[in-house]
Amino acid sequence: MRTLFDALGPTRAEREELYKWFHRHPETAFTEYETSRRIGEELSALGLSPVSVGTTGKVAVLANGEGPVVMMRADFDALPCAEESGKDYSADPQLGRMHACGHDLHTTALLGAVRALVENLDAWRGTFIALFQPAEEIGQGASEMVAAGLTEKVPHPDVVLGQHVFSTLPGGAVGARRGPALSTTTQLRVVIHGRGGHGSMPHTTIDPVVIAGAVIGRIQTIVSRELEPGTFGVVTVGSVHAGDAPNTVADSATLRLSTRAYDEDVDARLLASVERIVRAECAAAGAEREPEFTVEGRGPLTTNDVAVTDAVMGSFRSAFGEEGVHAPGRWTGSEDFSNIPRAFGAPYCFWALGGFSDWENAPSNHSPQFAPDLQPSLDRGTEAILAAAAPWLIR
Image 1 (cartoon, rainbow, N blue to C red):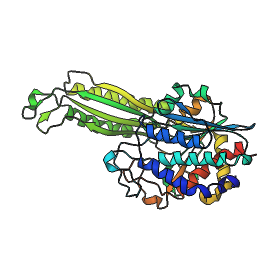
Image 2 (tube, helix red, strand yellow; image 1 turned 180 degrees about the vertical axis):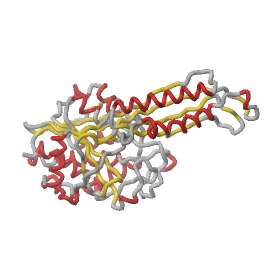
Image 3 (cartoon, rainbow, N blue to C red; image 1 turned 120 degrees about the vertical axis):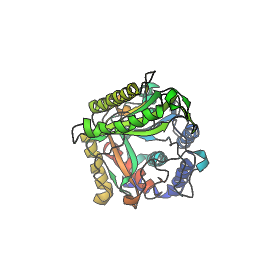
Image 4 (tube, helix red, strand yellow; image 1 turned 135 degrees about the vertical axis):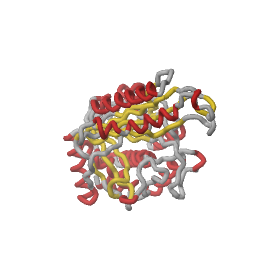
């Protein structure tokens, strides 16, 4: 492992510039054409033959003799928000999109790990699969790659690995937990239909904004009054839109919301409650059309395999010592990562990487101020991939 770690020093400046390129060129779900192209170029420059899977997904196989097969996944889509991080390599705010969740770091770290493995074949044995996934933010990228034939295009992995940079643990720390680690999520679009009209004559209308307001207030009672105390659940209304003029009652209002749970049955109950409340408020207001419900994305429960997680954490402790290893609590975020190992029937481990030295005051993921410290985050993220794969590839 030390040989692979030592190989990172001479490439540090190049890896940092590559990270800055990804950061300056954010692309949102399923539009990551330039990002995908650059990933392919970097892999090809290392002598690999990257394969396109789905709209923008990329995967490369590095075979190095007999041994286990390890797959490592990195996501690479950005978010639709303007950057306010103040970094000298910030994305142009006029783009209206940025890497507010660190996927650019995930991608650069995996490319760096692949380079270290390619340039040090004597240090390991087996097969390493580098998988670069689009559209994580809408919960569809992993499933799209599976539907596009991923399982037929690469060897069957013995283990699948993934990491994510967060602001909720010390900078440079890494850590994973056994069992449930990330919650389920369902992203739902709700359209409430009213009857539009002039703002001066509300009595001739059925105001969808008023209905939406009642729905938003009532939804807040689902977790506090319908779930048993101690049962984890979250319902968040993240977007509300209706009308474009101050003196007009709109025809409809659109809510976009998400649910979170550590149990598939609880998630189903949250969604059923949302639908019940929306329908009841529409009926109470005399709405003449039924509301519409569209699932825009789903994220499965992420449950780390016990044996795999123990092996990964043991390797982290060996590589980084206790100072580098952090035992995180359950994360309330969600991921579509586990759709990939599930498609192969392979065990997996997904761990957290601390991205900020002043982590207690750092902006959260999805904030327009979110931009991890370039170092040690990039080096540690790359080292973590190599260390996590070591129990299978280094004998």
